[in-house]
Amino acid sequence: MKAYFDLKGQTAIVTGCSTGLGVQMAKALANQGANIVAVARRVEKIEAVAAEIKNEFGVQTLAVRCDITDTQAVDDMVKKVMETFGRIDILVNNAGTGAVAPAEDITDEQFNNEINIDLFGTFRVSRAVAKAAMIPAKYGRIINIASMYGLVGNKVAPCSPYHAAKGGVVNLTRGLAAEWGKYNITVNAICPGYFYSPLTKETLDSDFFQQNAQTMIPLSRYGNEGELDSAAIFLAAPSSAYVTGVALPVDGGYTSM
Image 1 (spheres, rainbow, N blue to C red):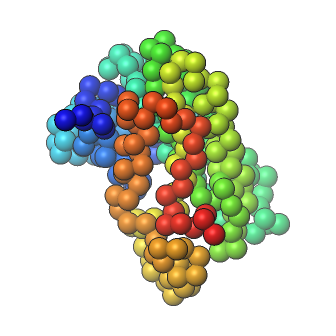
Image 2 (image 1 turned 90 degrees about the vertical axis):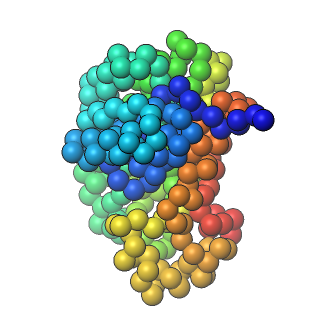
């Protein structure tokens, strides 16, 4: 029997791994045997996540504080991972932010911050990991977490800088896939829709958002915990070697209409 999604012995970095989807994807990769590096700015959060994953899945874990807007911090984080594990096979660029306001009221600072974290941050970490680990090893799986809002606009939550940044992540994914394919590095993007989390539950359960789900989403609901996991595992797997440059919506069909 072939283990299509076996990740035993591999090392995966997950940014934005303090809460929510980042933690869920880290656990999904650990469930397949990958050692996990939890990266975020809040030390106490990532240390707790790393300990929980180690206890639950029996894999090696490492918590590294890193601000992805700081190039030196990113390079130092990658150096520490290489010193600890000697390899980086999988990178999940999940760290991000989101400014919600009418476009005419968005400040320069808000727009710059969005681009610096969501787009340039994704590039910074990818560049560092590719240069230090994946290009020398001639192997890698980079998974960028974009958004369905990187593919379409919306009338529900005005967030033009977020659309711009995540749209940039989608095409950055294609650009890096084209450039790094010769090194046997695949670069793909997942474009999630709205997912339930402790932070979004109240909003998504509101009458307005429930009506929006019925109108705008073919599955007539929002994403539940764990429903992003299989996409991450698929794109991280060695057996997915011929899949690159893809933007995969996991959005209940939102972008199909």
